[in-house]
Length: 307
Image 1: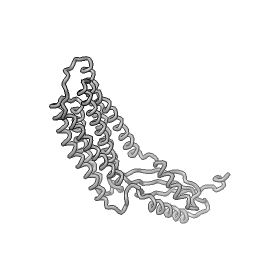
Image 2: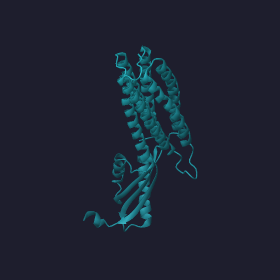
Image 3: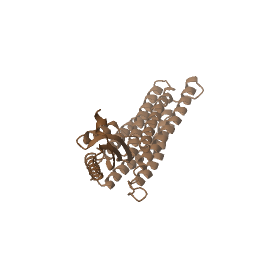
Image 4: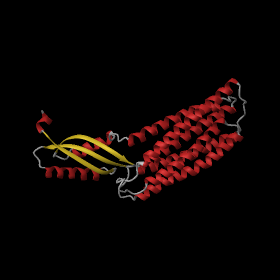
């Protein structure tokens, strides 16, 4: 179950926009604090984490626009609404996450190498920098839990992507904290090296987001769980002799299903239509993520099914 059909679409929209607005506000504050403290406190790791937050602010603004547009009502050109914009927004997030991860990795590796070989000046990171990293971790845990809860309730892929980005920021800040501690212990190159490791985790999550969003836009077959549930529901319809094909189109949290079934060739077209209506009603009433079901049927030779 993704979302109750009786819920007002506006409630879903408001919940998604709340996640974006809260995340945007927190990221803007954290970006300013981490960049400022990273420079003042001589922490390459926290500065890189702050730059990551700056990029978060940019694509949160982009996602805010897409989420707002996805809530527009259906029209003649978009009979199922504009919910696919959520998948496009997720693609934007994934691309930004990968780009940010690559940039932080490159900068961190260069800084770590320069410090290791002694070609760059070494600065002692100040104690208060560690406190900022720890506050960031706590804030991002809250944001991750909040975004995950709304994502599961609404089935909004863009919000799911933002939840994973918040989770990435937890790892990024943990890496910054570890690097700060290493610097305090006299291992100056440990600070940027920790940032490089975190950057790889960030980039991997970006790839995962891109893959999931692309799958939805390319109309992949339904998950095994949904397909199995469809088979289970239709097993009780005696007139259906076979299920030939299941194909779904995703529109935000909803699915539009194309189903091909085989029925007894001796039945009339009227009987076939009645079976198709039965299938449609049964599936839509049982699977709340379904917006529409198109049932195609054709005659089958019953003997071929058993011999």
